[in-house]
Image (cartoon, rainbow, N blue to C red; front, top):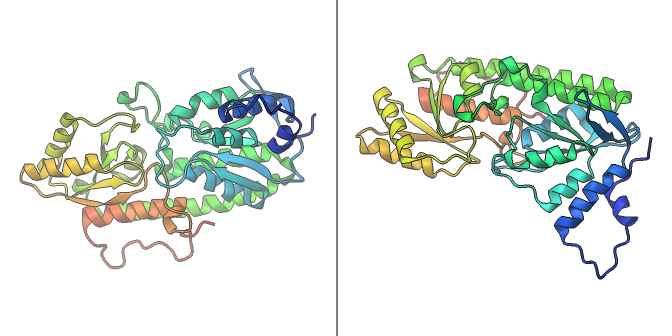
Length: 356
């Protein structure tokens, strides 16, 4: 098994004549291809393909690149001090539209493993993952979720809805996938990964119970969640809400005048008090919907901003997965049911607001 070499070590062994002046993109692609010959050994996957994997990792941290913030945090929770995680997409970034930069390619080339959501969430990066999978280990956290539990909306052309993190129980299955992946790469520390995973899963169980308690505050006829795009279908199924989005499952789809008018009629006919914007989606469509509703003689408020495809800023409660989910359910309940009655379902002190 060949010794693992970092990207800087690979670069230092390749002497480029000054006159060549490679463009940055070509340099990134060259380095990605060069790693085939400089990292680890080769394993054969269940589908017959081969991939290069690093050697013994027990003596150093595992270098991980994660796409969205929820996954980066999940890897940190399970891996603890044994992982060094770099996230590609920060707060407010839409993964459906994200394009990998040359720097992203270099970071992925230097990683021991790239962890991503899958199910076409990172739509424009799918081709890069396919090219990388024979060179660098990749893990799609949704691979461990039973396909019978996944939603396949007809408007998404036969593909699965990728927004699985809004059903906390499905995200727990994703945590188990990360735990297995890290243990497989570094079996010497498997006990640590299993222990960390168990602790995090316990906190997610508490979170799921909290969301169910809070959702029960909203009368059934008012459990209608209207947002910028269809990111909340798993949330709706798990916690009893009818969900409608102006855009489709992916924000690549544009909302038209007919979509706005159809939702405006729904709001007026059902006297829905609030609609919601999303932190990673421009608010113009929801603002247009609000105007269309008011033109029909009914007033609807913007109930607040929900976190959908990205978490909040680092260092804030919403910058964690648990804090993001809590923010969303609190915002939804407050807007649809009014102020919280005293003594209804507060989250246990110290049971998961700070997941670091």
